[in-house]
Length: 422
Ligand SMILES: Nc1ncnc2c1ncn2[C@@H]1O[C@H](COP(=O)(O)OP(=O)(O)O)[C@@H](O)[C@H]1O
Ligand SMILES: CC(=O)OP(=O)(O)O
Ligand SMILES: [Mg+2]
Image (tube, rainbow, N blue to C red; front, side, top):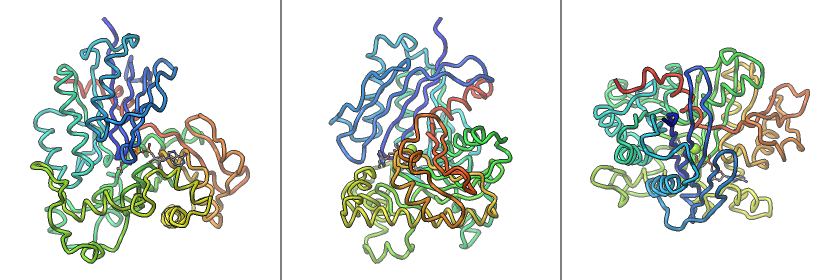
């Protein structure tokens, strides 16, 4: 009998990333066998990367036919099934657990097995985050159809933030309505922040429970998190992932009245709505038609960053807006931590690859005791966590290659006995 596998599926706003792991026991880290990703869904053509058994099988292949998370998942599954040299995965029954990153988990604080009841509960939750949960739930359905023996587990991006105290998570609105409708700060990118916290603590040789970080997950969606003693005490996203920092197609924080001046049709359904998924024009505009795309025409921050360096006015403005908003959170979280900060951490696609962005942010927060090391920052290397700050500076600056798929697989292996179907 072949060993049982864990399949971790991370549907982000511009990408679908899937990693396959084998696991032995709850106390050993699952071993990654393969990693396959389709990125650039918001800046077509999307591209495919596939590595297995430590070697690259496909690198940056353009695939014109893929435009949505569902297309991407179907393409990924096909690629895996047709790879006859991938001996560990020969049959859908080899997959014991499929771990799904679900962005909005409402009040769920733990990974949860998806049965009919939880599926419907998650569907209902999608009203709060239609643009984020719907794609993941489509993938859950597809896995259920293709791999009927696999146990599907939902891992929530919001769970890590369950520790945020009341003053930081409560909106100053009528509390009866807030409670009834679940209107509070939830926060997202929690799987990433959990991975970042554990790995940075280990890099700093401290227990996670004594580690204080200002962590930045900067991908197509971007957020900041204030970690005190290993727990989230604040984060920049809110009721939905729209709040806080701007992103590839998201406005980030605006005055809530702005949308009614932008369009008088704000409350009407957007043409992007379906029978099961209702999206208002306001949600469509602020989530899908704003951010870098609205300012510069591209969602690729790598391009924006290099064009900004060449003097392109709108790219420079987009770059400077991002730096401006990020340093606002760094300052705020520095105060929340009373200056007791072990490190400022950059992660996510832009945080890991955007050396110009890191340099600009760290320079602006120099007054707090962060300093960049030009050489280290240009080439941080491949380790999970590396220092890019100047030696001897008051606070450290780290880059963490975050891995939401590994975070899910690790938690899944640890809790396999409880998560397995009865
Ligand atoms: N060299 C680079 N410099 C700056 N940003 C980059 C670079 N390469 C990729 N990126 C950014 O990383 C983003 C993807 O981040 P990622 O965290 O993988 O996305 P997702 O939010 O879909 O999970 C891309 O949209 C792109 O803007
Ligand atoms: C929560 C969120 O914005 O996720 P992503 O950055 O993966 O789109
Ligand atoms: Mg992501």
